[in-house]
Image (tube, rainbow, N blue to C red; front, top):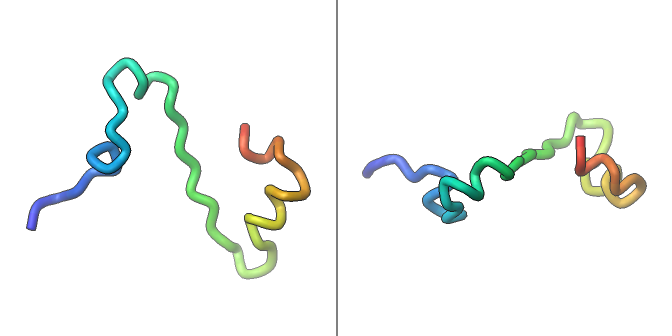
Amino acid sequence: MGQILLNDLLGFSEEEMKNVKIKFNQSNGIENPVDLFKENLDLLNN
């Protein structure tokens, strides 16, 4: 089985890729990233 790249799933063009930012929020065992996002929507933009 070959590699499946993230853009194979998302399908962004070369031009769109210049503006794409992907953030994977994982729990640190103390804080839930979904709850943090709900409390402060600006967390998405950093």
